[in-house]
Image 1: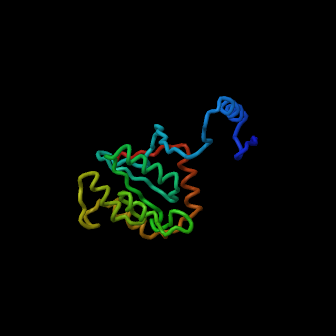
Image 2 (image 1 turned 90 degrees about the vertical axis):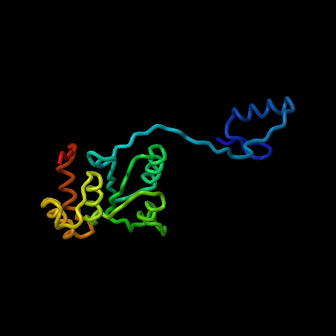
Image 3 (image 1 turned 180 degrees about the vertical axis):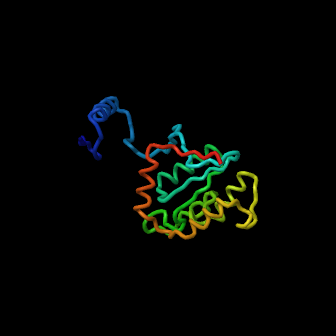
Length: 181
């Protein structure tokens, strides 16, 4: 409810009562004259998608990169500057919001995050090797399983197959996947 006042409206009956007291005591005041900035400090927890064993490299996989996620990762980086968070996007050329010129990749570059497209296996393999202290200079040096994975990924189109995703999600529901490789 808005309470009437001479110069405008007050937000509550309590404010109206205080105004009456201030006027009765002839105390000068300003009602809501300006905003005062303040910081909200909350402790939150972050659950990374993939942590490369034996390294501090974190791979965060994103199809959509919403504003709340971008804000979370900036706060996370400021709170933990030693974390090495790298993004793997379905499409790093997606715009951060409708009508924006800024892409997911542009945002990462601006804020100092490494990023890759999900189908850019060369970059992802480079990151994995970096985390494990290995270096495969070309695809022929990579283990057979990596070569096979590379060829499977390159054959897929960049658009998602909803049927395949639905099947995969159903199989993984309620199951935590951990690799010891």
